[in-house]
Length: 445
Image: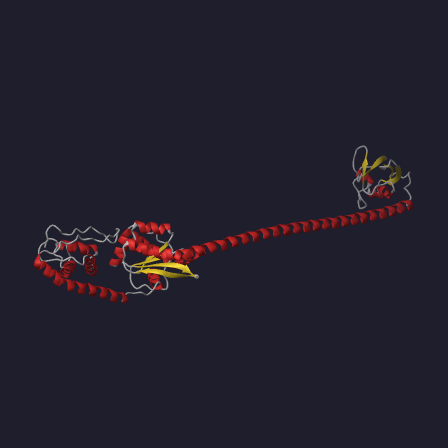
C-alpha cells in the first residue's frame, strides 16, 4: 500500500477501521477524511454518514468520480466542511441489491452513533469551578473561533455572560446567545455555513442585537449553557428583557441553514420588538422627565447657593463693619483717655512749675532758654545745665499754648530735641550750653 507508507501503526489501524465502517474503497479518500478530523474516527464517520446518507459503495473500482477533499487545518485555519461530490448512482442489479442490503445497517449504525453521543454527553464534566475569569474565557473562545472559522460572523460581545444580560436589560435590547462545542460536527457545520452568512451578519448589525458566544468546553460557556437549560450544542437562544428579567423567546438547538435561522429570528424579533419600542419610548420619557427635574433641582440649588452666598457676604460685611466700628470706638475711647491723661498731666505739671522757683541766674551752671509755641507765644525760663532734658519737655508741655502732640527743635543747628519725661540725659550733654530759642511744633497740625 503506497498510500500508508508514512502512517504510524495507530493511524493505519484507524484507517482500516474507518474503511470497514464506511465501505469507502479509496484509501487516499479515507486518509484525507481522517486527517480533516485529526484522526478522530468517530467524528469522521459521523460526518460521512450525516452529509452523504444516500451514497453507496461497492467493492469494484470507481471510475473518474473520486471525491476531492480540500486541505483543512482545524486548529489554525477557518474550518469548512469537506464536501464530497455526489456519488454515481448504482449501476446494475447487483449494485442495487448491495445498496438495499446496506441501507438498514447504515441506519442502525447512525442511530447507534447518535445514542452514543447522547449518552456520552451525560459523562461530560459539566462542573463549573468557583474561581475563574469570565472575560478570559470569552477572549479565549473568540480568539480560537476567529482562528478556526474566520472573522466573518456577527460581532461577539466582549464581556461576560452576566454583563451581556445586564447590558440588554439596561438598554432594552435583544440578546442572542450562542453556545459552541469544540469537535462537535454540528457546531462546525453551524459555524462554517450559518454564522458566516452575510445576510445574517447584516441583520444582527441593523437590528443592533447583542451577540454573546462562548464554548461549552469553558466554564463561562457551561454557565450560560445551564442558565439557558440547553440540551445540546449548537445551542442558540434569543432573549428579551421583560419585567426586569431576561426571558427566552426562541431557542434553536439543531444546525439550520442561515435563511431558516434568519426567518426564525425575524419572526421572534418582529413579535417582541413592538413591546420593546414602547418600553424604550416610556423610558425615554421618564429619562427626559427625570432630566428636567434634575435640571430644575440644579437650578434651584444654584439659586439657593447664590442667595446663601449673598446672605453670607452681607452678614460678613455687616460683621466687618460692626468690628470696624467697635475698633474705631475703642480707638476713640483710647485717644480720649490718652488725651484726658495728658490734660491731667499738663495741669499737674503747670502746678508743679508754678510752685517751683527758677534757678538763680548768677549760678555759673544756669542757662536761659526761650521757647516759641505754634501760636507765636514766647516764653523763657532759666534751667541748670545739669538738669535733665526732660525738664525742658515738662516745662513746654505744662504751658497751655503747647499742643498735646509736639516736638522741640533748635534753629541753628536744626536739631530735634528727642525726649520725654523719662529722658535722663542732661541739657549740657545734649549739646545745649548757651542761651538759645527752641521752637515747639504741633505734630497734629
